[in-house]
Image 1 (cartoon, rainbow, N blue to C red):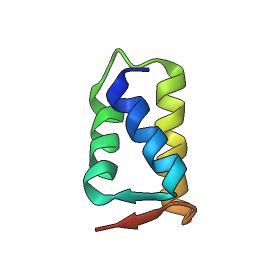
Image 2 (spheres, rainbow, N blue to C red):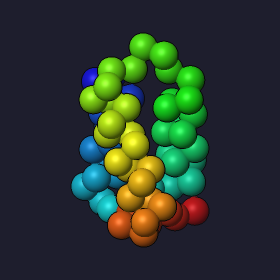
Image 3 (tube, rainbow, N blue to C red):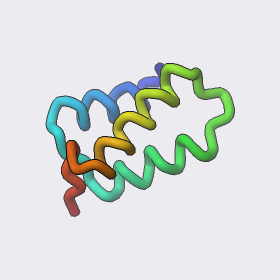
Image 4 (cartoon, one colour):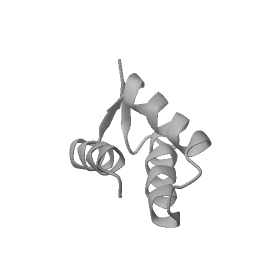
Amino acid sequence: MPSTIAKLIHKVASSGRISRKDYMQLTSMILSITTMTPLERSHINQILDAVQTGKITLID
């Protein structure tokens, strides 16, 4: 995984929280990075889904 994606995923997964900035960064990555691996895409989708279901808290 590119280090930016890996660090962000690890940070969110370990804390159970994500800042609005990081949420927007992940959303942007999933829409714009065409060289992303299926595993990276899956990890980001899991984070975004967890935010939507309330398993990860979105903070300001």
